Length: 591
Image (cartoon, rainbow, N blue to C red; front, side):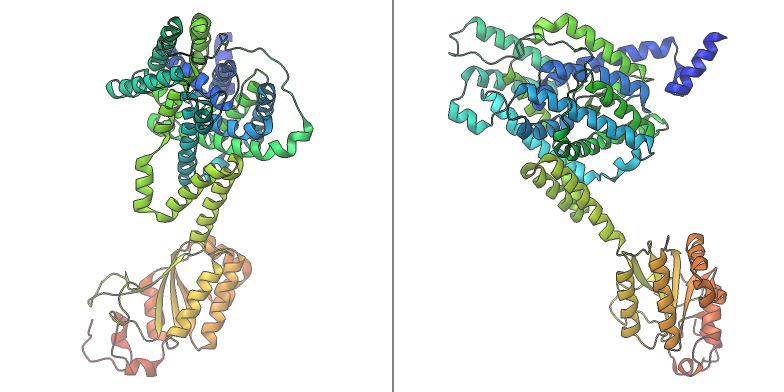
């Protein structure tokens, strides 16, 4: 009984997955966790180099944040830790602030990580975790493409033997290190060959082991290439211990925009990955809880020597495919990594920087989504422009500004599209009873006849204050282009919502139509639209008899009771069935 109560308490705290844990899930999660640890081990070292911090910080980031995010988040299969996007962004932000000082780089990385964690927690506690959905796929595509180029540029310098994070140009000026070039070239070739021969295998780990073996061979035969390639040095550890991250209040004005940009990247990536996995596994996802788990992981990680962590796609998908059933797979991945580092620490100290650079070149190559770029170019040129602008900003601006600029550009494009709802002229393309309404805007003028007195207009999309000028201009064009069409029937079932400015717009159109001795009518407006009209009093001014539930009753009322008899008597169009009952109609109906 006490065990049952404890399990129920854990289920309330951690999630309903606790009730599903049994011997089968334990075995599946332990095996999946081993794969996750093997995958993250070389990546953690490479991403730490990308940030400009010691490799131990990369390994620490792969342990504690992975454990915390798995147990505190919502997704069952997302594995958190260092990733290429966050590492690149963090490193690019730290470089001008740290001025090449390794100790200052570490201190600033911890401060930024703490700020990111607190921002994510704040978003989760205020139920705003879903704000990450505002990062459009186009922005992420552009940022990722720019990140790939920046990663490749930095990695190429390492392959040429540049010290620290110097560029390839600096490496060429200082002189290429033959040993570094040989190790980098062999590691790159080995990684690409293994990826081709064994796509699902641990190709990065095997290539890293190959680079270690080649480094040992070169150092054993010192005169082989005339120089030695730089190595990582002392064996790193994956647990740095708990300590208070340094805080410099004077730097907050500079760090807060960076933290916001990193929060957007990390949260957008984590929730996007969680959504992908949830769709594949059928799991229900709580975006706010996932945001809370990521925020708690970064907040705690800042006290344990970690830099910014988030969900990793190239570890989470293999985790799902390896059979992970519960978040315990993430917890076991963290524990497996501790064991691997403890056993293989001396070996990891031989990892050459040129080999890490070669692996980063492979990472950069994999980041370029060529199919995504081609698809955008073929299907959505405006979104392609947003992606290209984000990529250019990533290469030329500070990373946090580039990311925020991409998000703002995407939002502006969305607002522009939503501010131009479609207004389509409706009519018939053939004679006969029961024919459907069709859009006739695309046809040449006068190709399909319209009623001389009644305009049929289909409204598609929400009408809000930003869309009012576009809709008002279109309505004005209808009045001025065909002044004899004094009556307007708006098919409003696709007008999803309106605001106060839109209610005033329709009231103005009602006044102008009636001043011209016509009227305004609506077919099937949505309940939320009617509610706004009633709240503003528009329904009373329009008249309930001008709102219709179906097209047949609308046309029957308007054509038979509201149109001018004199105009009907001279009309030869006779567009509607009801026209057979109007003055001037032939004895036999034409429709």
